[in-house]
Length: 411
Image (tube, rainbow, N blue to C red):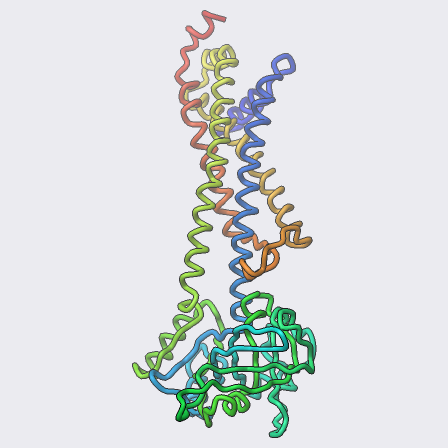
């Protein structure tokens, strides 16, 4: 497509002064249709990507990248596996943990929760780095005074539902219990709240509580045993490969699970939803493509004389077809550019001002986060321009087949 085809395409697209009305209006409608479709795609895909990003961050703020369990048995808290596993390429840290379901009661309130034993090194460092401490201090969990109540850190949603503050006492009941002559009796102990944290995920903030491993071992009567080991890796996206290396090293007597495997159903469902939304919203651009085709058909009908004159002056069928292809691509490119600008602007406003609030007990997240990635932009822009191009082919072909003699005869 040379300068001649491009110049004539611009002249035909915007029309001359006395013919400007319908062509310009239909052009604007086609541009608006493409722009709306591209804007909707960018915002929705950005929201879905941001949701996945935040969900990953919230999940990994509490959960380990990889967990290692011994099948049918617990592990000693001083297991040499800690030093052994840190030698596996990709593993940056290995720490023991305890995980158990408990019941929680406070004056007038009762709920279920998960008690997690945390190693002293993590406690003295201020707890998991991604958690936000609202009140108190995680370091206080390390208090080993034997005659004092064990210390515990709870989520802010749990604190609100049980009406607890730092310094209050919380009854923790384990259904595992201990064996007696009357049967298995549940264990019960009073813990003192010394920290309230905010993970940003409702499930964690409402159900999770932390205590030091020695105090949890004492409460559950585990001796020096722990549930398993938590591994942190250098690249979370490579956690499955590192987990496979760890499993190969330890053998079949150990169960190794990475965070991708443990949450596979959730993230697969989200990715499927993202793909479906992309297909559905692409239909908006497809509808706009019919507008482009209609504009070109009307242009061919109104510009029959001009096309005939161009052909009589020596313009080839290929040149005529190229002129109308350029027309359609200009409409698609302008609409795509406007939609891209509006989509990026709306996404930035959503990210900054958080207009949309979510019920956190349903979605686990309280606000919509937007993450517009370059790959998504390229995919959307490419899809919009491709659809616009395909919409130009048939009208352009019809224009190129026009007989100049017949066209001038009826003018």
